[in-house]
Image (cartoon, rainbow, N blue to C red; front, side, top):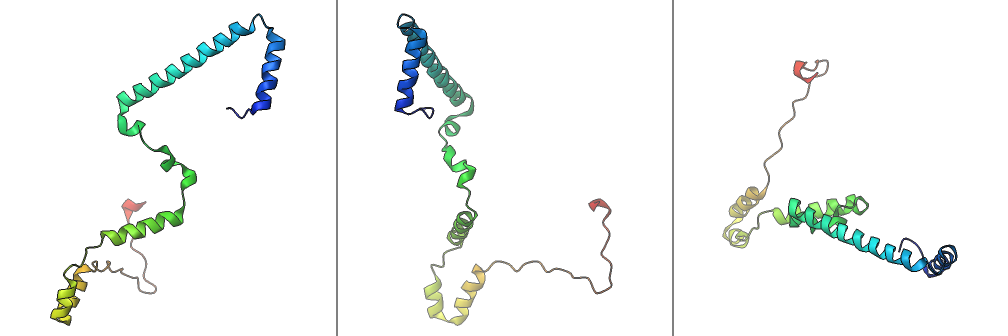
Length: 136
């Protein structure tokens, strides 16, 4: 509760009784209760308005997932690598293909491999790089 422990709350209550006096304290306590109720109803109304305008999926979203303190690059890379393994095609027919012969097994392995990367053209020693007008 706002970083106030029990003893501090008791001290604040005693100070309030001394400053306000016993005759005005009930009125101020009632005003405080009305203010808290009004604040709660305003918060509920804002939440309902947000739910109507944006939709249920935004209001019910788990915001802790988006906390930047949860960012751990090692975990993100590990999850990405594990997801990548799950995305690879399953070789359900690999066992019969290997039994049929080595050529059939290599055909299955070759089909599962990604396409080779594009080759990079290298400049010869002393050759100048091409100038691109649109790049500047």
